[in-house]
Length: 78
Image (cartoon, rainbow, N blue to C red; front, side, top):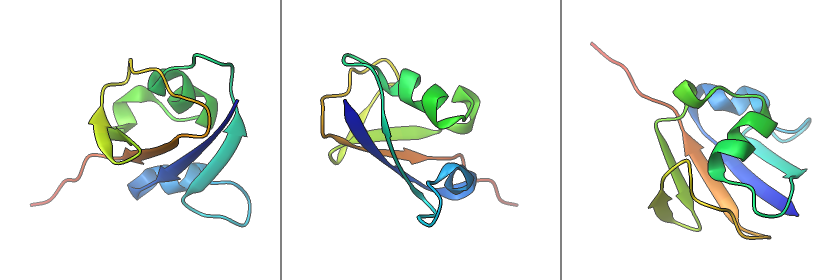
């Protein structure tokens, strides 16, 4: 299935060529958010929050075909 992921923060580096902050790829049917994070090349610890079609979800949530996944990194400051 084809999934689109919008990437924020340091995850933008995993964007597709010519599309910083956007990754589009094929993953097996029934993949979880966690599976897609790995497919992108990121580590789970880099993801502070995930949303599917605008709603917050856990990394164990199954992603439906054609869904838009948003991944956000932790924010630090001082």
